[in-house]
Length: 268
Picture 1: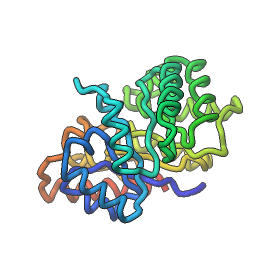
Picture 2: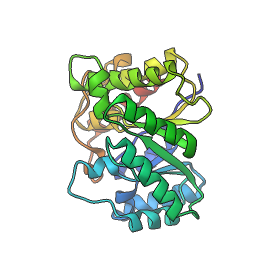
Picture 3: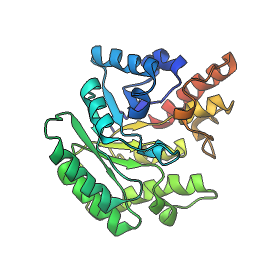
């Protein structure tokens, strides 16, 4: 299996350090347009030809009162010029996301960066149709970590285990049904539990190219240590986007670095 590229979203104080532990950089657009230090870091990354995936912040907006602004997003794409950007999507809305994808790329034909389409669905049929569409039109296929459909197919003792197991089961269903596109790169957005990644490694799902997750960082902020190759039994509380300005003590930093090391071992 090819190496999975990993990026851990990190607080402002660790962004420079993230150049050492990240394989590429993952940028949240709503932070890029409102946090000058965050913007300066990513502008410097682009100037140094570091790969950047730009996220439309749909997951973060779903947990706040903030709203997606298409003009701001397009301006962000033009300013940053990321390697890849995520086309606007809506959580758990497979058919709606496909319509949004088509409308966006038709409206902005001059955006030549790689376009990632996110697969959504409340049931398997919607999930499959969403996947087939993205397989045909997107450069990069993304699967989020918290689809409502994972709840129906996943197995586990808590919601984190259910969702984590659910994504692996859905991917295996797509493979078994001959729907999975082995010729396109896939990205996994976020992580419920790190142990999920042993599945992709053991089953040689080689075109999962990249993942992004703040899981080991948020665990460290909460002073939670990974349990070696087992990772965690529950997802750490909180969103990285809400902790960008946090001041870390040395114990938190040490725990974050330990967790990142353990996460790498799980993935690779």
